[in-house]
Length: 107
Image (cartoon, rainbow, N blue to C red; front, side, top):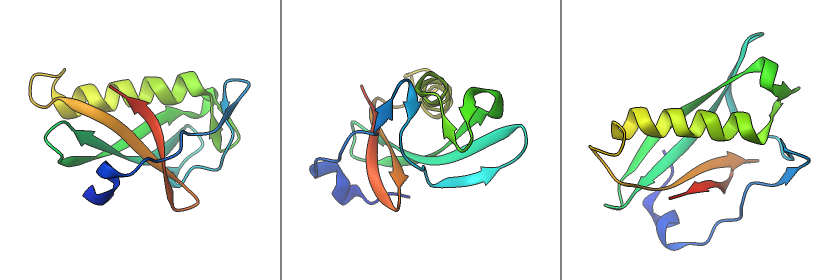
């Protein structure tokens, strides 16, 4: 899990070029059909929830997902974790590139 100290810090946005993530994400699982990226959902309550962003390999360029595929995975994971916003109010989603946190989405 990402530490709550990141809540107060500004983290860089995820680099993107031509609708493809332009960085090597810290991948937690890679199979022939999917790429799974670890992320952290920060909530308005300052708590954090671990997420697994599951991205179809068909929507990747090697180990780098299309931005639309990553955002679709974020949307699905956040909906599961917050039960569609009825359980928790999301703040932002972070993932790691080379061990450093990067902003994927902000709500």
